[in-house]
Amino acid sequence: MKRGIGGLMKQAQQMQEQMAKAQSELGNMRVQGESGGGMVKIEMNGRHEVNKVSLDPAMMDDVEMLEDLVTAAFNDAVNKVAKNSEEQMAGMTAGLNLPPGMKLPF
Image (cartoon, rainbow, N blue to C red; front, side, top):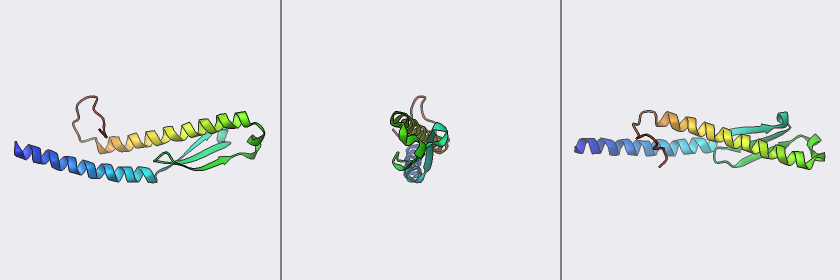
């Protein structure tokens, strides 16, 4: 029984190290959300921090539409970060036998 617990503890420690590495990599990840056929672009990192916003000058006359396009581009970037994070975490946890419904991080 001790050997099983020791192995589990070692696996948990390795998992913790992998999680720290993955979080660091996700923070360095860059995604670009777009809307309006590329008229509005938002660059975001894996920590959901916006690094850059690019607006087509033609959009400056219609503030209401510009606001909608910025919102859509931001949401596109957030969804891309979430998808990339999910994919990376799935690869890390592939070898674990977690109970159904249990997700990481806890």
